[in-house]
Image (cartoon, rainbow, N blue to C red; front, side, top):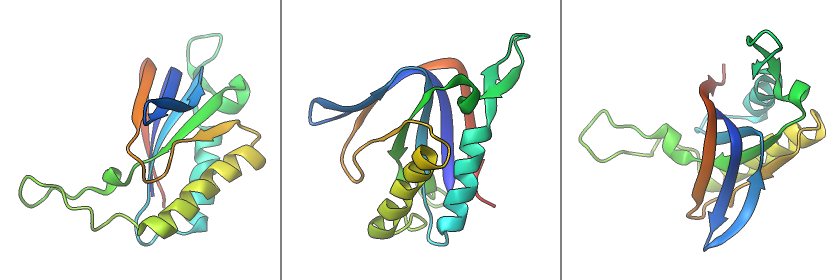
Length: 147
């Protein structure tokens, strides 16, 4: 499992011309799953996202988590994180998880962040063509991977 965490001042997801999810300050997550991922990886990375300290403290050091800041998350499924470009110029997505299983684990990530960490987490529309808008804060962009 891979998650790209972008610290944002705002982010939104639009499908068919309508905004379906939006946040102000917080994280924009791009979430990719591969065949071997399980609930264990989802739980592990949910904890990492919740406790990741990439907001400045009073001294300007990256020392505060999204929990400390009481910010929100916009989570977007993105199978293209598992693109294989080693051969040719057209990416292969055979390393991405089957969409039916991937959607279940993707939604479980948001459920854990909402219920176990009390972080307001909003989703994109799984499997849909989405327009994602954001104002990156910093910019701060971190890639997390499961064990």
